[in-house]
Structure formats: structure tokens, C-alpha cells
Amino acid sequence: MTDIIETDVLVIGEGSAGQIAALAASEAGADVVLLYNGQASSTAISTGFLTYAAHEGFPPEEVFENMRDVTGKGLCDETLLRRLVDEAPAEMGAIIAKYDIPVDRAPRGFRVRRSTGMRGKDILDDTYGADGAEDMTGLMMEFSSTHGTALFSQLRRAAKASEVRRVKGTALRLMREGPSVWAIVDGAPVRIAARAVILATGGMQGVYEFTDTPQNLLGGGQSMALEAGAELVDMEFIQFYPLAVNEEGAPAIFLYPDYPSTAKLVNSEGEDLIVKHMGAGQSALAALHNWDFLSFIIQSEIIEGREVFIDFGDTTDDEWAPDSLTATFLSKHVPDYRIRPVRIAPSSHYTIGGVRVDQDAHTAIPGVYAVGEIAGGLHGANRHGGTALVEAMTFGAIAGRHAAANLQTRSNAAKDTANPPALTRPGSGAVPAELLARVRRVTQQGLGPARNKELLDRTLTDLRALQDEIAALGWDDAEGLIEVTRLGRVARLAEAMCLAMARRTESRGTHMRSDFPEEEGQWQRKQSLRLNGDKLEFQDIALGDEPLAAAS
Image (cartoon, rainbow, N blue to C red):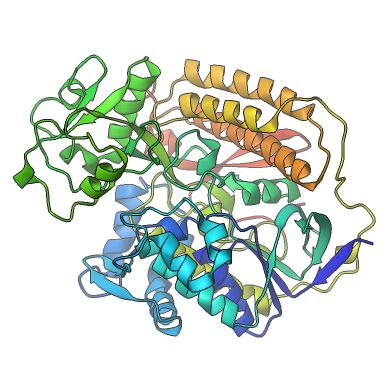
């Protein structure tokens, strides 16, 4: 007999957004289940910056205008942005105090205090034993991750000490009845019948071959929401970090900008790319002030068949800070970095688009919320540095309380176990992992930070051919079901991104096209999409004119 878990609020995901949402709902009196899959959280490998109006040096209106006009390029959902700016100071102050999060003051907010002398993995091992090590093995940024790990560990400690019920498993399908979820727990289907579901599953940077975040971020929550009737918004906007190490055997870690300004950015033909694309007088370090354009020129070189490197050969010992994070990392993983150039490439860093939500983080599906990197709309065309954790925790708290106070009527349909997901299906003998690698290669080349019509058309053709191969796959057990389902969803999300990028015939924020290099006034609008049968349907949204409508 299929198992049923009943609860008031189901939270899926245990990053900062999910843990705060679960704690807030529980503290508001709801019975809460936190479903986590035991895989890496972006929170735990983050650099721990908390950018918001925390003190007089960074007033709210400056935050608002910076995010809306400078980074968001006029495409922010101002309702979401206003709520974040106005309420983050109180929300973050309460979270920091309540859960004893160690922070240091920064010019634009705070930064979580790192635990010195320990790797992030060591902290989790020390705090949680084998459970923590299993969750995060091999994915800690050894040279700086303990900022994020300190935050993650404090929140996880609070969740474990609370009345929140933690269940390890994989969410498979979001159902409107309840709402509820089909999940795989201990290898078997389980129906989790709730009265509210909060999706906090993170971004989708793992759709790309090269990312400086956990590769398991494959957009599972976005896909479940889309299939259940929610909208996705701003899917053309993905933030890339331009200078991530791309050396065999080294982690895909972005180079922290604390290296000497005499470092050069060169291609495999020996050309200085800063001079070639930006003119003389700038350095590779100075060019980092424009991540998007730097990512664009690097990706353009790669598309044309050239490799890109950062060359530290002309730097001198006295130019390197004794505590340089870049030097610390490279000394371990690329020890001859001062002798030979280090190969780099843009890495997918943050998902800007996602599930469309209102100011309470509520989606178009009654009783279903989305918080953290899964949610889209707030950041517009780009994200202001240091705001990701603040957004995740602020809206996590908002959604948790709102869900607890607005529970849907308990539904018998939510407990229907008559048609669980099938654990076997005949199909082709193709290897899902190999198909996933092929999807990632296609997206890395075609949906990266440099785009044009010819490239996007070719990418769409390749993705649809891969979808046909994926549709023929079968599986023999629960793990196979999860793997094949995930793979099909990755390919469809990549298709959605490709179509959104092709529709936006301009360059704005992180979306840069060589065939449309300028911003266009007619594109001062957002794009959303829904699933109609098997077809993705787009809608243009005039800023401020279109409220979020309930899914039919």
C-alpha cells in the first residue's frame, strides 16, 4: 500500500529559503514537513554577503534605485522589489538575532562571518556527522565557502531543533489537489498531502555544462510548477561569472577579484582580449566591473573556437595580498599558475528568471508558493550582488507565515494514492547520464552569455532532437524514474530559455546578442510562459499592468 504523509505546509528544499520558510510556518502554528534530497545547497557554498539597507550607509531608496535601474535595467517587478527593500531590514534583523547567525558589518549590509581554520565540509562533519558530510561531500569552496556554510549550519541547526518534520526524499510531481506532491522516499512512491506547498528548490544553473554552483541545480521545482499550471518569467536572463577556472581536475571555482591588476586576459592565439574588445587602458581586473560584457567577449571567443586564459605571468610577489583567496585556491589546484596561463570560461552563476509570484511569493496555483532562486521577476535583467540570500530569507519568512495563515481546505483528493508514479517503463537502452551531458554541452555553447539568431535556431533544433531521444527512454526502478524525469525536464527548460532568448531581440542586462547589440525601448517589458499541453506559450507583460492570474 502506498504511504501517505499528511501535513499543513510542505516545504521542498533546505537551502536558506526553504529552512526559513519551514521555520516561519512552524512558528506561526502550522504542522510542517521539510522535504530535502540530501544534495548540495547553494547557500552552503555561497560567499555569505547580505546586501540590504542594514544601516545608514546604504539607505532603502538607494537600494531600490540601484536594483531597479542599474542592475535590473528597468525590468524588475517593482511590487516584489519594493517589498524586499522595505521589509528586508526587519526580517533580516529578526533572522540574524533569532537563529544566532554570526555577521560582520559590510559597506552595503552584512556578511556572514566565516569560520576560520576549517573547510566548509569540516564544519558540516563536525556539526552533523555523516548526514552533513553526505549532503555536501566535495562541493565546499575550501578557500571561502565557510561564510555560506556558517549560515547554512545555523539554519539547519534551528530546523532540526524545531517541530519541523524533516523527510529525506525526492519530490517528483506537484499536484493541484491539496496541493500535494508525489515523492520518492526510501525508493517507494509517497503521497504528501498538504494544505500549502512552498517550493524552495533553487536555481537551474546545472542546465549548463560549466557552473560554479552545485550541478544538481536542474530546475526541478520550476518544472513541477510549470507542469501544474504556474507561469515562468524572465527565462532569458541567467547570470554568468566571467572568470571561472576551467582546468582539468580543478573545481569550477570563480576567481575572486583580489589578484593583481597586471594580470592579462588572453586567448589561445596570444591576443590581449581587453585591448581587442575594450581598447587599451583597462585591465582584466578593472573589466570585472561589467560582468555581462566580459562574459560576452569571452564566450564570443569560445564560440569562434578559441580558448581563453588569465595570465598571471607578469605579476610580482609584492602585488599579491598575503591572504589572497585566488592565490590560495590556485596554489592548491593549479600550482603552476604563475608560470602558465590558467584556462577560464564563463560559468553559470545565478538563475534570474523562474516561477512567477506575487508579493506574498504565491504562484498562480492556489496554495503553492515559490521562494529563493526558483522565483523569478524581482531582479529584472540582472541581479545586484549580495541580494540572493537576502531575497531567499526575506521571502521565505513572508511565504512561511502567509501559507500558515491561509491554508487551503483539507482535500480528500490530495490523499488519493490510486495512481502512483510507475517505477518501471520499457524503453530504449540509451544512458540518461550521457544524454544529460549532451544537453549541457548544447546549452553551454548555444545559451551562454553570447547569443545570435543563427546560434539560437541551431540550439533549438538540437534540443528538440534530444527531447525525442529522451522521450524514448525507459526505467527499471525509482532511481531510473527520477533520472529520466529530471532529464526530460532539463531539456524542456533549456527549450524555454532558448525561445525566450530568441524572442527578446535586444541586448539588456545578462541577455546579450551580437545581432541586436543595443537596448530597445519596445522591449521594456517582461516575458512569461505557460505550458499548454506539450507546447510552451509565451505572453508579454507590460510592467505594472498585469497582475498574476490564477491558473485555470
